[in-house]
Every structure is written in structure tokens, then in C-alpha cells.
Length: 232
Image 1 (cartoon, one colour):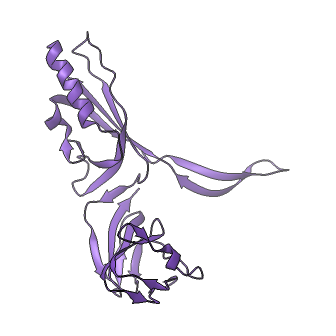
Image 2 (cartoon, one colour; image 1 turned 45 degrees about the vertical axis):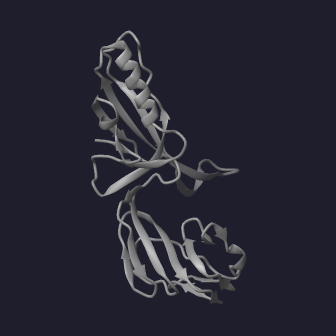
Image 3 (spheres, helix red, strand yellow; image 1 turned 180 degrees about the vertical axis):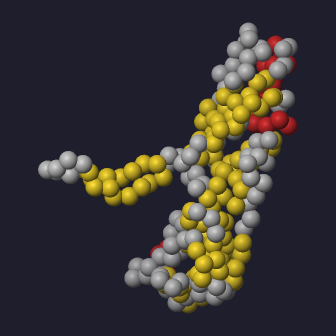
């Protein structure tokens, strides 16, 4: 029904799920107040976080067994970082979030329902494809969805001197790319060999390639473009 870091809630503890509510992404408009007239000038819309709220009942009446199940729930509901959340709405899409509210349980009313478990999606509030599509550089491709995809360029090979990665409207140039496992993260605008950044080799006169939705896209260079489509 709901998986968190690959483990289903109902497999972790025997609960009866009453509802799963997925909020829209919070919209945070940026506007500039006019100095001398009424109103404001709209600048842009910025997306915030998204929440997933699970309402359930725990039907165990034995006080000792119930306390054990509560501990199992707390162990399942990890809070150290964001994990993949798989919900029944889509079999091929997921959210990414972290538990931000644990249920407030009564030790007397064991039959209570409306227990609430809440997740918040911070870094990536979009519905994200489970499938990663790999496309060789220099191949025309299309990206579906309704939000900018997660897109990286990856390569494992020998040193490159003065390489360039270019789309139809941007060009990223490096003085060199050392040998090893290269990952250029187009969303975060970073480039690294393994865990070592090589952004000191990025030419500041370049323009960064921005991931986008649409057809007839092309990125030339070396390696593979890896894409996860996303939806609002």
C-alpha cells in the first residue's frame, strides 16, 4: 500500500490504512510591491514542499504487544534523510521524502483510529519516474512529463582535453576531464569524478545546459545522458 525505503508499512506492522492524502506542491509566489500605486508586480512562481499524510488504525489490544508495534513503527519511519516513497496511485512513479510527524498514540484507547503519519518532500517534491532512460550523447531525444526532468551526463573512461557538451542553445566547456567515473549533474550544476569535484576545470565563459521537457532535444559530447521524467 505504501512503501518507504522499499519496505511496505503493512509488512512492518499490522495496521489498517484508512486514507493516504498527497498534497499539491506548495506554491510560493515572488512579487514586487509597487512603491506609489496599488497592487504588486508578479515576478515568478516558486515551488515549495509537498506532504504525504497517512491516516491509519492500529487494532492490537494487548498493551505489551501494542507497545512493541509502536516501536516497530518508529523503526520503520526513519528520519535521518529522504527516502523513496512508493504509493498505490502509480506503479511507475514515486515521491521522495522524510518522516516529519509520528502518530500521537493513546495507551488507553487502543481502538482509536485517525492515527497520522506525515512525510514531507523537500528536495524533490515532484512525482518522479522509477525508470532511468539512458541515451548516448549526440542522439536526438524527447522528454515527457510536466516538470523539468532529473538529468545527468555520465561517462567512465580516459582523460579528455578541452571537451565540450553542447545543446541547441547552451555549451559547457572544460579545460579537461580527468580519467575515471564522470557525473555531470545538470540539475545541480555540478561535475565530479567519483566524489571529487572538477568544477575548477569548467570554463566560466560557458553556458550551462538546463534540463527541460520537450521533443527534438540534442546534447553532443562524450558518454550517456541519463533521464528521469517528473510530473507536478
